Length: 141
Image (cartoon, rainbow, N blue to C red; front, side, top):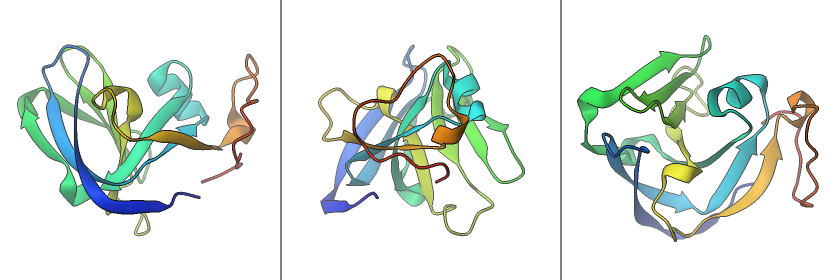
């Protein structure tokens, strides 16, 4: 379970080519790895993200380079139109989650205070790997 770790910290991130840059306030340091089929297709393996308040996300550069893909009836995924980097997952139609956004952990500034805390949708994980780090595993979110 994700826990609060004190006051929100301002963090920054960017896509691989730098065409999209952003900042946000992280009120948690816990990174979740999702193993669902969509996230594996989206990322090429499993998708690690840090959840933050949606309203804290500010695009500082390249708003015109940010694209959104509607990946389900309730969620969308943000990406860089220039380099294709996977940036965000937002459940815009789920009341419990629409006020939060998942930000790809690999896009966040190096050295940011965060640590892997759990694995979700492990029932859908790829058959080609094992999860053996001892962290909590959930079949859903």
